Image 1: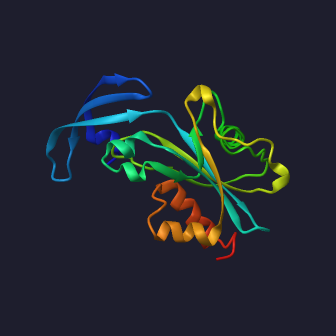
Image 2: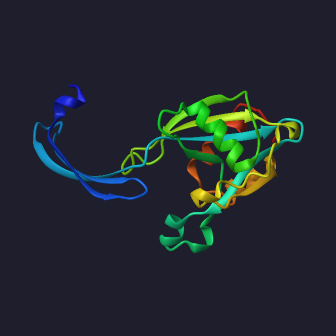
Length: 198
């Protein structure tokens, strides 16, 4: 049975509309045993996003970012709130994912890249947020560096750019220094496909 035939009486109300939009969604759902149940969920909509892992085959390094994440700090993990992540950002209205990721790379880490490879599309937390992340990898060289990066001040960004040996970064995942899911996925992609030495 198609999923649309297992849903009825869907109602949606806005709980908050700040950085994104938080909805309360009530609906009737048909379970496999034939019973209908009324359910209620919250769904956070902040659009779609992109992320990318830049890697250098000559130096065997990757580019990552580090920035403060209030959601982690507020969840009683203040020591983990300076999160180490791949370069990432939201897709602007009428912007293609590949254009978005190139723009984010230049804004956040200061590289102008052309050749990119999409490797995944992923819902990071589909139980709570609508965000789909378009995930890329790209090779970089020193000649592609056009600025110091660091993000946009008008967007409240203060981003530290990290160029790190790939072997060290893998150990940082193993030691739980890197906990961002998108970052771990892309690092494992590079490792599995042997784009860098380990």
